[in-house]
Image 1 (cartoon, helix red, strand yellow):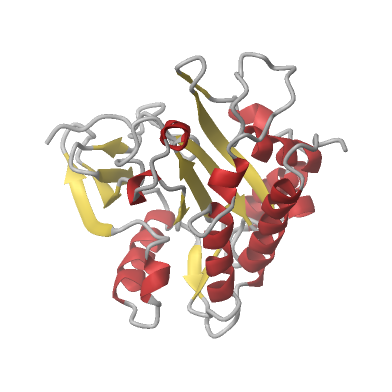
Image 2 (cartoon, one colour; image 1 turned 90 degrees about the horizontal axis):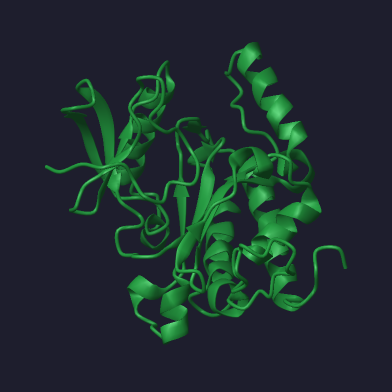
Length: 287
């Protein structure tokens, strides 16, 4: 089995200081190292529960990675890894964005130290003010035939207008080497709108979250993926369509019959940001 580091990881843990990072194989699988303390255990517990939970509607399952169990991987100090569907396997030049949802990112049982750590990050980003924050993104610049990815520390400084501008940049055809250019939102309609677009998928998730009380998705992210070259070529197959996926479940807890208002509120806010772009695709963030 040939494993390699994923080419288009925009957020989450990476291999560093002797700790293994995620890997992918050529069979469409993604290997995620089990996180320390209780986080890895929580994530495995969620995937095992979710994959067998008959109360989850079938049309909702497509928004989650397929779970293939856990596996010890040679060459990573025999580290135990969660084996998942590689969400980018069908894309050759994907544009990807990771958006962490909710106005708070800690879970109720967290230590005071962890809560304070999260609180500092949440109040210093758009998590509190907008109900979500952009954790990372990468865009394929078809004019330059290269990928462009901002540094994560720059994304942490985004205010609400900056987040709105970034969501426009994500669907623009401007060359990112021209930093001063106003994003043209050229792909906004193809990516965010339409019966198979991002907005339609987010609204379907919103409908479920308005009633689901199975889980509370603390500190989870929405992953958005599309391929601008497919749009330019007029491809409309399933593999070419924009996709929404939920990822990162190391802090998921049982819902205990209570609606997940933290995630739902963030999702509603994010939907409004997308709607604003579609209603005024040519507006700058400052207008």
